[in-house]
Length: 263
Image (cartoon, rainbow, N blue to C red; front, side):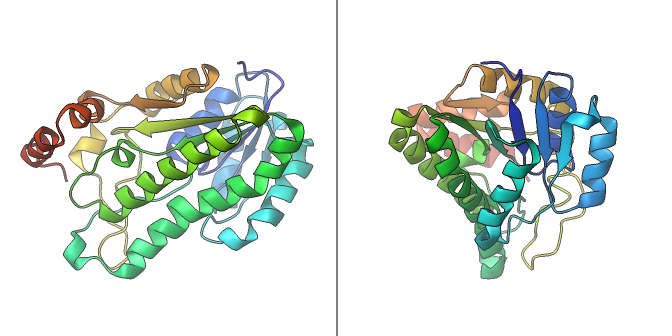
């Protein structure tokens, strides 16, 4: 698969991985729709991309998951079609379970799971009618195994795997592809923007994220996986091996995570 002549829709496109994807894809012969909550930030990304005339902006908030039908109709009007939806938008969390408000759990589910699912379901009839389409879902290694202080985030990411694995099975007959991307630590603002126990932002970077993969390195690996139409891929440094350790021995992974003192 190539991106030539494709229309790629990216959520969470105003910063981090989404911004990196936009800038890299803008070098290729495709058209791009950029979405996030912040119009001004999206406009800034568009200006920094190559061939900005091939890029359109469609701001919306994933938390408003009941509005995704209209959002999808608006997106389809921009270039007349959509070939690839990259579900990248979302938030993280850093707080102990015992202290975390249930409203924080709900917000993570609303944004990271229900918003993504609602948007994907709204686009699904179009993909089925065209007998073609590709969902790319930015999950996390935390969608495969868990870590302390990320309970709500892990729960939402685990849920994405269950839903999109089912979608892939149901719509294999319709030539609809699903690629689930599981990042490890990537040097973005995800930790700074993570919600704490009361719903406020953490506001600072953590060492593991700071020392994670550079966004441009991560994006190149991610786009390679999309081109190969992989079902699922793990991108990171040493932390990605946790997926394989869990398969061999969940108890061993438990001990290794405890010893790592990941915050």
